[in-house]
Amino acid sequence: MGGRLWTDIWAPCVPGRCGTLEMRNMMNRRKTGIIGGGASGLMAAVAAADNRKGAGDEVVILEKKERVGKKILVTGNGKCNLTNLSFSMEKIGEYYHGAPEERLRSIFSRFSPEDTLKLFYRMGMLTTSREGYVYPLSGQASTVLDALRFELERLQVCEGFKDGFRLGIQLVVAGLGGEKQP
Image (cartoon, rainbow, N blue to C red; front, side):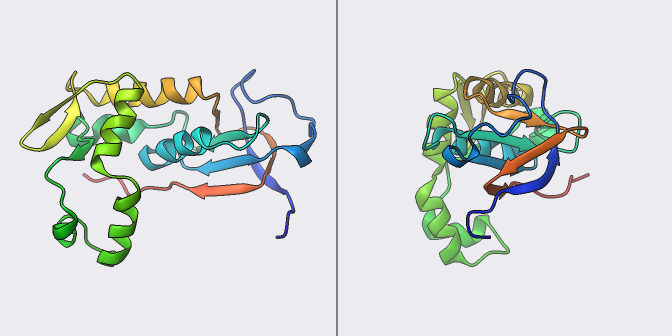
């Protein structure tokens, strides 16, 4: 695409959070679109917003549902297991299936379970561990969603929904997650 703007992506904006419709000096700023407002999309949005290059750079979550993070509320029977302290790079094949072990090692060498704990602590969320499984101290998945939403608000990440306007997106991240489990 060579520097061309992705102007055919449509998504709405929460009024007053995403700016105006005019293309304000698009050449000097980057807009990153995160497709999917589930757990992976929210984490990707936090990472993208934390790593912005310029003051005018924006991050927008493009979600088809009326609210981001709804599936987080039912994970772990409503408790939301954040990570596993028993995780071991040597036994990575026992934890995750469907991807080559070398690829998994590469991913987890960049963002470990300890990094997950540090990130949520930085967001103000306390955790507790039971048999190596880490949960929010409150024991409620809603605490995890609230921490992520407050962090996204602090980072001025825009949430897009169904009806909307045209966005000029230079970088797209697909945070689509998986299917809902029964």
